[in-house]
Length: 110
Image 1 (spheres, rainbow, N blue to C red):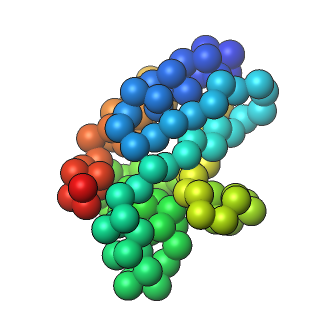
Image 2 (image 1 turned 180 degrees about the vertical axis):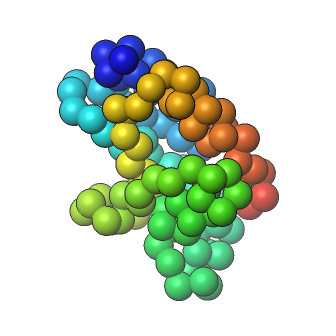
């Protein structure tokens, strides 16, 4: 399960518009980078949240998927990430990635 998800998850994430992910070298978490439209970054500021924090809030509210924002882990200023655990059954991971892909966040702010 872990080896399969480590190889497969970054590949799927890289095929979602606005997300890029480096190959995993080990560990239980992947930290894909979000490329958010300026309008989304500005909206996050208006609601008093970091852009990746606001993205995670929208993800849980609209898709029922919980992830942690990169701002909680010391990401480089001006970048936005999410943290995703790959230590889940393949079927669960498939559903998580499907919901992530179907979130219309980027379309809304592009």
